Image 1 (tube, rainbow, N blue to C red):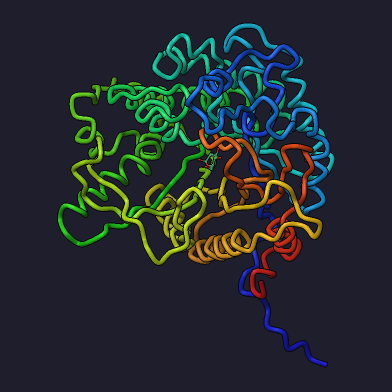
Image 2 (tube, protein in one colour; image 1 turned 30 degrees about the vertical axis):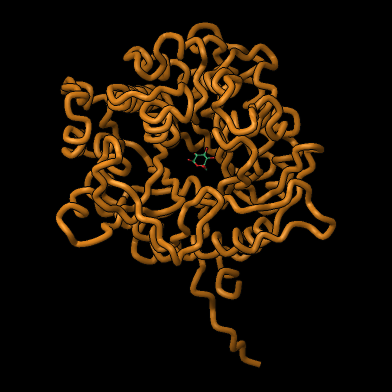
Length: 456
Ligand code: BGC
């Protein structure tokens, strides 16, 4: 009998990477084990008032001790890639100087276990946990950090580049500057108009210096990870359109323009006014290194309006009343993923792209019920965003992989453990892992290379 079933519209390329992502401080726990130094997040979280309910990463998902089981989980779900970050202060307890071999050995073992199961590691060198010793020297405000970072990166390249094919330098530099230096809600907790441009510039110089170091001996691929949020003007009015351009420059172009085009978007000088420094031209030679791919973290969009009260952008988002919002109050807007991927492709010359994070916090109970966890909102979020990713592929975007945020429920920075992003549930009392319906769904999508998105 002839097979009348229509082929799925959603088949992804054979070489597509299907993974999940995590970061060191959010999952590892044991922050001071085996000779690790103190990180800025270790310190920030212990300062009363910084993190909801006084939560810290002291135990988190206990991944530092349970990593082998967690790799087994990924394998069970059929993933062929995993993005994780290295804790700088485990490898270099003082941020510079002697390497702590026991800290480095943790990542060495993890990489081997992943490869044993056919899971390609993608390493992020910096996902927000800075050695406290460097924080004490000004952290991202100190221009010397570019070579501190390159030296640290070099240690990892030397140890792991024989097995790791995908490297990323900095995770979401925009969040480091906006959350850590402008609004003070993330480490180091500063609230100051003069700091964000300096921190941003040093993050970019550090990125460039690490890429240069990689080119001197690395054999594989290196890129940067940015969080992009497409900005749509709330109206055609001149003020809203200008506000949208400012918001877009600040969040979406501030980092990618210097990396790809060797210059800052012109709106930034207007946003920061007197706090906008004059940058030496040679810095842009360091920053504007060719990279092998871009990592895009996508969660939501913003419909933007002029707002004189919002410092310093004079722009704010308009809440879309009819839309679904996640627990972090982010609008669910899958179409924005297609738009933003196409935008990167058009503006920056169609570079290879990985979706390095995409996911949603929705309410799940602290303890998994007998029958497992049903998380239909997260399943729908994932299905629609994977369809949107596929639409971008069809429009010619060179999309190479998708990493769900996150493998596990984890320490959500200033929200502590109150927001669950995992596709695998973590019971923080017992450390029991339970794959949610979204994990089972993702597993099916992976097994069918996307075809299951048709029927789901
Ligand atoms: C970060 C993650 C974070 C996630 C959800 C991204 O901004 O890279 O560390 O947990 O978004 O907020």
